[in-house]
Amino acid sequence: MGTKPGAILAVIIPFAFIFIIFIIAVGECDSDTPNSGNYTQYGTISPDEAVRRLADMSARVDAKDRFVSSGEMVVATGKADLANTLPPVDKINTHFPLTVEPLVTSQDVVIEIFCSTEKSGTKEPDDWFTKIAKEFNDRGVTTSGGKRVQIKLRYIASGTAYMYIASKKYIPDAFSPSNHIWIKMTEASGIVMTPVMERMVGNIAGIVMKDDTYNKLKTNFGEVNLKAVIDAVAQGDIAMGYTDPYASSTGLNFLITVLQTYAGGSEAKMLSPEVMSAFEAFQKNVPYVAFTTIQMRESVQKGGLLDAFVLEYQTFIREPNLQTGYKFIPFGLRHDNPLYGV
Image (cartoon, rainbow, N blue to C red):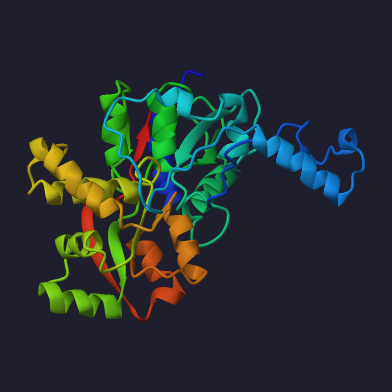
């Protein structure tokens, strides 16, 4: 097109700062399965016949019982084939929709941005970057050559976006995760990342805790910090939820911070057998792992029974249900919403 996406991205921010969603399908039903509504091949049968057929089919299923705790999860330390864990590219719009999709022509410069879900949604409080992108598109900004510049914004969790880019299965023009961890991981995979803005909106991750739980930990540990929290969880004294570190920036930040804490700050010991054993003891007492912080927030809104859970501060202060009866305990690296060209 003759114009570098990185150069165009640098134009976006001055206009953008006039302003300051988790539904992902995990599979598709085949059209010939009973769930699809195609029942004609089965005809009409009596309840007794239905029970008999179901018992017959069940008898042919080779199943074994394997009981695990509700929070048990394996933390993989090997190198996974990222491309094989992702939905196919031709299904990307179904799984990770464009929340900004302008009408464009072949003469336009179109920049697609992979954007974390807490800012690329379609309704408040998760739509601030969506509003910025729409405002930019409405302004009709052009390049020096007279071509109109338009932004496409894709709603996708930071970790999932990283996997698409690092595996080279789908590479956008730009990437805006919640924090810099994903940028560093993407660079480590061999992808050249060009900084456009290191900090669009400042934010931090933290543990949201009920006041009663906070007071209990202060009595037992003297100080309520991350070490006190993870020790209390490992001992089964409190119920805590956190987010999937393979998708969520807050979840990855929390995982790294917990491993650093168990390792006494030594990077070399973070994956040692002693640290992994301690983390597994902690993990077995975690009753709930959400996919993203949005899912975690929605769970709390529905009256969850967790004593503590991870969340970003900007989400915490904008959630009315959390304004009384809760404390916010910061941890880990900052979430400054960087924007990088890919």
